[in-house]
Length: 286
Image (cartoon, rainbow, N blue to C red; front, side, top):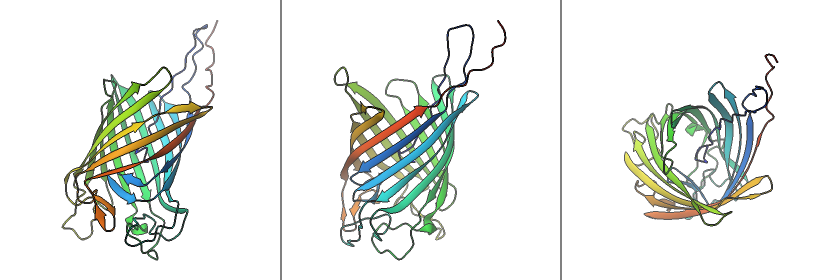
């Protein structure tokens, strides 16, 4: 759920002003495709070569809340098996390799000027140990996270998220972010974002049965991004660029033999969504 990221469910309310014929809130279905120069997750370089990241979601209202279920995948586009230069989540076993799949479900609901979200993510790594490239994640790394988020309808749209790994790592990752859309012209905007990450129990543990996402606890990275969304028919197309300032030793890896305090990555995301037809409720009377 990389958008990610994370894919966020939307509560759509419809109404009419004719003779009190209420309509139910609508259901939304969406499909995304990201094409990026590398796969960077929470500051960590998972694959340092081009990837494709398809996703699909379904969001539907229930009462005052919105329920979203979806799936997201990372596909290594090439056979990245250079042991000196390639980091490959699939281990460089083949091109067009499904390296990771995330399935998730979440519920969102408004509280005043805030939106609260809670959910669960399952991480599935389908490859095996036959591949040798750095970065390989196998079925042994499959795990689950629960998470909560709060976003505010306020200047800079601040959001705070907490993810807790309940299986392999048993630690928390905390993320805070702000965003701002800058009008470049009447029809063009530049979407600016900043996200800071913090490890709280996902560093290297003394327990040999627990895995780690980061070298240590504390500040992990700062991700500064800029995107320019535009519409082409029914598609939303957004070129985006990320500058990552690395704080944790693990986030500094850019290849098996190199590390850096900063890294640059980017690409293109294509999004399509459709609100399904609302169903009018029965009229009560004249």
